[in-house]
Length: 168
Image (cartoon, rainbow, N blue to C red; front, side):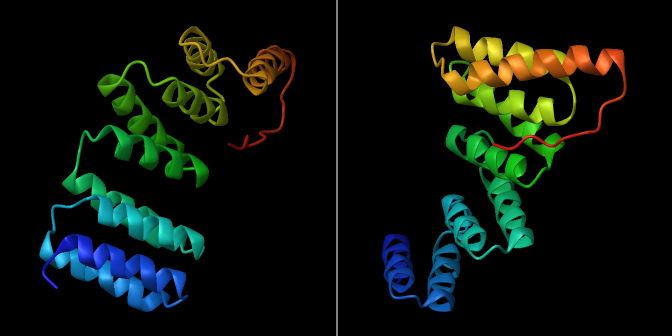
């Protein structure tokens, strides 16, 4: 078929049946029909993530970036993937771009704060968490994280502390 939607639906059907290689082929066929459709790379990245094929996840998100720079949903999704795989510099760039495009995206501030916190940049992490709260998305977990950053920051000033990577 020469219809991108048909390829996507066929890929989903193959996934449901556990025919993963056929599904991947349908996504690749969809890209041949319309190489500018960046979301197909996202679908492939999500599939590869489920298969724990991390290098391919990152590659597909980078491919989507080359096609669709400035797509709010894609920036946020890429940022989350980079954060999950501890690629904090890339995550920070994606979340900053997301915030520039959509300054009311509270979750982008929250996840940007996580990226900063994992780089031991407590000052910027706290600013992001405060903005998250200001935007009205207050959650108990955030309060815990905010207090954790404050404690860790004061703790680090008094003596060296082993680096602990914080999770999503």
